[in-house]
Amino acid sequence: MNSKTFKKNSKLIIFSFALAIGIVSFIPTVKTQAAIDSTASINSLGWVQLDGKWYYYYEDGSLAKGWKNIDGYWYYFTDDCVMYKGWIQLNGYWYYLSETTGVMAKGWKEVDNYWYYFKDDGVMQKGWIQLSGYWYYLDETTGVMSKGWKEVDNYWYYFKDDGVMYKGWLKLDNKWYYLSETTGVMQKGWKEISGYWYYFDNSGRMASNTSVDGYYVDSNGVSKQYSVIYEAKKHLGKPYVWGATGPNSFDCSGFTSYVYRQALGIEIGRTTKNQIYSGREVSRSELQPGDLLFTSEDHVQIYIGNGMVIHSPKPGDVVKIVPIYDFWRARRIIN
Image (cartoon, rainbow, N blue to C red):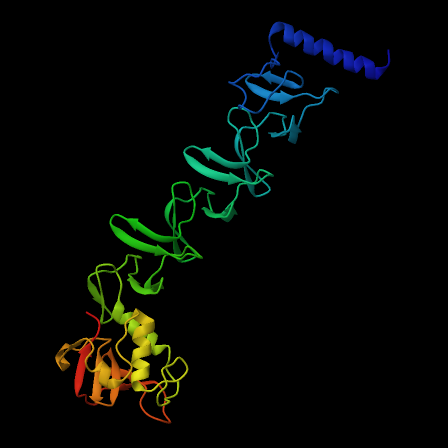
């Protein structure tokens, strides 16, 4: 008998003796629910339990150590060859091995009521991830999947209970919020949405039935006044041309009619003489942004607040903002 055969037979004799007196036990070939997941299988070949710890023996009698793929599943064995369970950090990366089977986690995994995501190599993900077209955020420190409000790089986002980043209109506790349709960022300040202007405070809540920056915001959160002024300011610097109605040049009434049509879809008439009879009369003390001011029967301006107007003044000039000097009549188009 050569030395190699002697060593192999010696190991078998020692192992058989240990098995006989109950020191060690093989795992049965039948799948055991208490020891395995519904999909993982630990067979008698190779697996040995000793003092409640699992080991894996190869045919040559050596024990598994480090990462090992067994029957298509990954396991980690410590330096003393014990199959590891639970959280483990290796080379700066976190992994999770099932507390029951020791199988390395992949994909979504719930641990102690928190959700985590593990790549195919088992590494716990952190930060932003996109899966099947949906965005998720895993805490940069803990890896925990975000739910509800979350501040990331000084921007606020909202994540549903399944972790998906929310986009669009969101109602919480009877308050409306708007998350960008592209980035998911919670909006603040003035925001144009589907052609309407809304205002969101620093907490992201939509304003309603109030005045913001001198502009009235209605019960639906829409500010028609702001819509008009915003549209008007888009054309600053465009030249006056008699008879022009936009979009590249304007006369005075061509400018005001174009602005109202584009901002609100309202027709106020083409000429100054038509517009004098649009809306309702208001006094100087009642002026609000969006009101039409007539310096004469031949010239019209738009009041933008704080004693300023925007208009297309005369040939050789351009659309600009100037202080109110005087006006003859004022008409309110927006109720």
